[in-house]
Amino acid sequence: MKFTISKLSFLDALQQVQHVVSSRTTLPILSNVLIEAKGSQLTLTTTDLDVGVSGTVMADIEKEGATTLPAKRLVSIIRELPAEDVEISIDSKNHASIKSGPSFFKIIGLGEDEFPPLPKFDDSKEYKISQEMLLDSLKKTSYAISTDETRYVLNGIFTSFKDGKITLVATDGRRLAMVENDLEFPASHEADVIIPSKAVTELQRLLSNKGEVVIRLSESQIAFEINGSFLVSKLIEGNYPNYRQVIPNNTSERIQVNREAFLETVRRVSLIASDKSNSVKLTFGANSIDVMANTQDVGEATERVDVTYSGAEFAIAFNPEFLMAPLKSLDADDVYLDLIDEMSPGVIRIEGSFLYVIMPMRVTNNG
Image 1 (tube, rainbow, N blue to C red):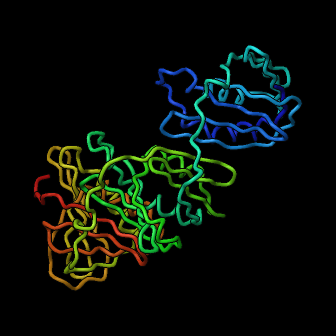
Image 2: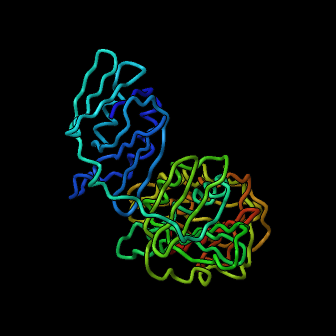
Image 3: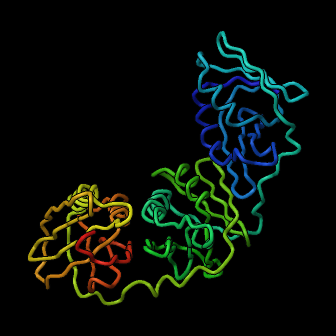
């Protein structure tokens, strides 16, 4: 096998697939990238057996073939090469010779026969969705995925194809983010699945704001075809909790606030919040919110934000990180805070089908 390729396009293609590679694998082949040279393009594939990704890149192929090479090492070598073009040849023992300008490297690979193939999706359900919509939905929800491995059904995004809508939900038990969008698909394709967080992260890397993504769904796997790249993942098995029952139905107060100003205020005030009493208190008064943090042995901070509000005066406390997370991921100018009282969950909404439920913290006066 022998090919010549531009350094930058090879590096770009390798970086698209290298994140799946696990450094702690017991199978050496899983540390490698499968490189297949055919026609005028290379296909690069990596997998950790749970998530797999493959992509293609144009190359000048002198001799077709396939091999696997250590992914992380290959990326670090290609990144540092001095010339614009790279020439790579592989011998019968899977030893790769890499030439670029005055540089020469030899690295030892493994035969492609041992590399586990990505699953096929022949009899799968198929959906088409705009990349922009899917990327936006993931951005608005993925930060709320639980990292607690004992609650593994929460370690991903619940994705529902029902009633002509695609609904994405993430929760860690203390907050919940949800986005719903219209999507056309046959009634026979209705399904509920949980996409693991590693696949969600890779998906966000591959998606852009142009074109479509084709989603294929089998019994236990999901695949995404995006701009010539292919991402496949096992699904999380288990029953996702009934998320709709934690969304408050009737809130008594709605406060409209400028998202950017509110975010900046919470960010500044939270500098005083400690890890132990990690909360900021919001006190609602006539056309204002006083944002306060008070921590013993540290100090206190307070800042006022102007809002449109004429309801009763009351206070509620939230974890500042949880409060800022949706504000960072949204791009609307204004957000709505829908509240009941200081003990009930608050809801952040925008114009459109996004909502974020956040559990309150106990209001204390001394942090």
